[in-house]
Image (cartoon, rainbow, N blue to C red; front, side, top):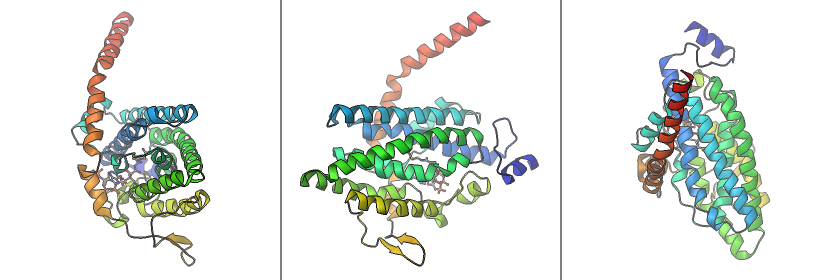
Length: 305
Ligand code: ACO
């Protein structure tokens, strides 16, 4: 293991064939699989608005964005497979609840303003969390993150623009934008995970160079970045305790209700059952595609042999 720690210590990259501690490998499979699952489940709340987008332009943008999420899932499943697992096995674990996906995708998208808000807040939080992962110690994960982050930046900008249009539209549109922000703000802060003191994996992940910053540090970075953006949008973040702290050089913010996060993670969020039912249904409906792909691959393998 000396070589592993040397590479990590020198901020190098661990590659699939390098020797690595078993718990490093297992923790990466856990995190990358959870990340991949989040990407494909994340297609659902936004996919629900493709047919109801208010214009052809908005529809085209939303379709491209939802397709991007599918692509992110594919890069991430491919990165997980370099650790010796099979994506079919990972999907089985998602479907029977042995692996998780992000809490954020268990909230409903009630109005068109939710689509802009997801782009602005949810993708904004994802960028803050994922940019440091571009420098994570596991090469295939770090490289997958580079492209994911570029696409997430586009998603965040389009969300901001859509929300800006609503916020500066009619009073009804402004109210719709504000309502969406009121509902998504706290769940977005929960995306960063529990407080550092309650985070089971942080210490090891940081020693391994997988995590570069703690959950609370990234959450603070997100708040600091988002407050001026909310001002530019003319929208209010629903937290009376949010104020600039000159001494800390950061915004203070209110107490997060982590019981809500843990309930959502346990499966008790507003849309968990619906998301999983849709996911399982999509998997079953796609069985014939997997069978056909396997039959085609077998035929080619036989011909080559
Ligand atoms: N939703 C669901 N589960 C969560 C969340 C969340 N928002 N936050 C933490 N958890 C889970 C962890 O997976 C862990 O459970 P496990 O042991 O069963 O895996 C437990 O809560 C304790 O959390 P931590 O010890 O802090 O977990 P970790 O060190 O893995 O940090 C984090 C969590 C920050 C989400 C990390 O895994 C990460 O950076 N992942 C990659 C990014 C990602 O998955 N993003 C998905 C959403 S973004 C998008 O798709 C647009």
